[in-house]
Length: 222
Image (cartoon, rainbow, N blue to C red; front, side, top):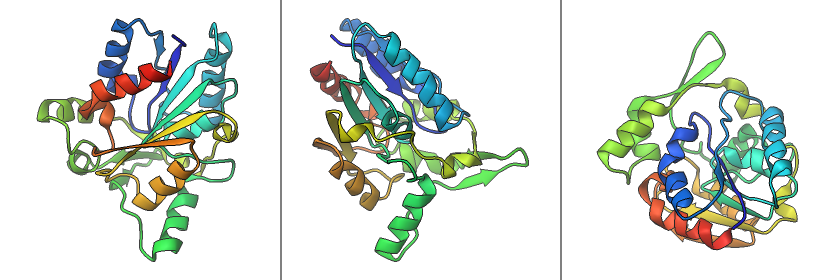
């Protein structure tokens, strides 16, 4: 099997992927889940690119949500798996997508409510994340996932990828029909950029609610 690098989304951390990573390791997969929290996209891209370059062979990259921006800037990948992720190219920031979807639909896209502190950090409204991100998870799983959340700098909304790896790398997009974090229109745009789309009836976090199915899909691409 090829190595696997997992890229978590904003406000999240590697521990959110403990279940899936553990299942894959028990099957013999070489899994790395770097910590991308609180760092600019240019920096996270350099960090992950080093892991790619050090791998014995071109790895598979599984990117969730905002982790898609880091994934898009990588080179030398054998397969990209975008899990309810943003698939962008240079110049396409999170704010860009918010404005684009607003222009296309005539309404503000739904977002998880945020608060801002005097240190320039954003905090998710913990009362809203259960429905927005973990609606199909058990209470115990959702509670643990919520407890692991952490702040992110407000600058993440103005960052874009270092490249467009999805243009010349085999890719799979996993679209989640019950996602309340990414607008359906954004998901459609992102999925259209990938070679294959798999659609699941799941929330924004199927690595928690459907770990067996996700591990199976990943193993098929390793």
